[in-house]
Every structure is written in structure tokens, then in C-alpha cells.
Length: 245
Image 1 (tube, helix red, strand yellow):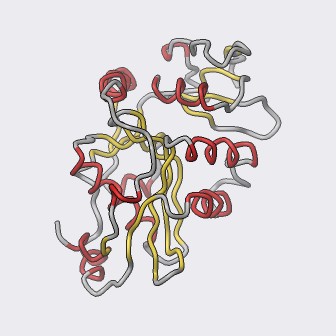
Image 2 (cartoon, rainbow, N blue to C red):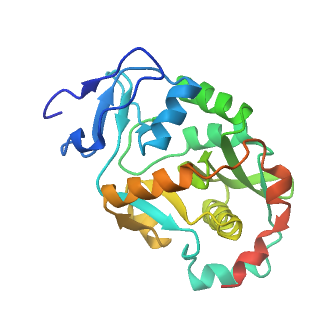
């Protein structure tokens, strides 16, 4: 680290530092310390900040510039993959296996990454957010077995993606595309992807300047949306629907 990040107040309701104070190297590191209480996590997301632990350091909080986002009407599946979905019998649901999805994300191997940032504390914190109706998962089922999934946090009409996994080839693509399709239908225009990587870019992610992203987040999180399970609202529908443009 080029300089120490700002130390958070022990008060979980204390404000985060202004994002403009985030470091350039490593990009977006804004603060350290604090906890993963529901109040602090929701406060963080409302201000475009997310936790990303690193072994050997106190809890680290990030707000990178630029931000990687998906327009929910522009998630792009490869043409060959979409054609294959026409004969696919997978089913997509929401909030039916949150604990299994986040645990699978924690175990998933990541290129150029040793270990996982989804620690036991993170698992417990997001499970609590899920129980409170703020964290959600989208599951892709092959029969009764998970083929893939994604999870994240919803506030207002903004969804902050955290991680996804595939147990079968393409499972995470289907989960992401199905989530984006549903969000678009609900009038939610953005899905946060946090940090750029080639996989996200191949699926249609784009970079947004931090100031523009934070303005969008402020507006979208201010829209009243009820917390609670998405199982009924999301529905139970075939992955083959994603074969259509």
C-alpha cells in the first residue's frame, strides 16, 4: 500500500470517508477496520463502497475508479452459447439456496488469486443480510443440482453483484443473464460488477467513472423497494428463455 487507508470509526453508523480520498494504488482502497454488521454493510453499499478482505490486514473497504457495471439490458451471451440454451432444460430460481451459492462462490477457483476473500466472517455477514431480505441469490438448477449461481445485495433499485460460480459449464453465465433480465423487467437499470476482469467484459460489462456511478447509486438506492425474499417475485422459469435476444 502506498499509504495507510483511513481507519473507520467503531460506530457502525458512522459515515464512510469521501470516495475521492480512496487510494490510486491499490486502486479504490478507501478505509480499513470496522465490522460486517448489517447496518455498516448497507451504509457502505449505499455509498458505492464494498468490503474486500485481504489476509494479514484489518477489514478493507473499496470504491474503485472506474467502476465495472452491467446495463441490465445489455448482458451479452455468446451466440453459440445462446443457441445451445434452446435445448437446455436448466431452471432458474431465486433465493432457494443462498447458503449453498455463497459457499460455492467461496470455493470456486479464481485465476491469479490464491484463496478467497469470502471468509467465514463474510459468509456469516451475508447470510444475515439474506435473512433480513437485503442479500439475494439466483440459482441455476440442472434437475435438483446446482449448475451455477450468483449472489449480491439489493438496495432500492440497485443490485450490487458480489460473486458467481459454475458447477456446470456456463452456469454462471446463465445466472448473470437471468438476473439481468429480471432486473431490467423490474426497472432496475444497473448491476454493479465492482472490478473489471476479462470474463465480465466478455459478457457486456463496461467501465463507468466513479463520480457517475455514485450519482446513479444515490438515485437508485433512494427508490423505495421492499426487502424480503425474491423467490415468488423472480419466479421459476426455464434457462431456454435466454436463447432469445
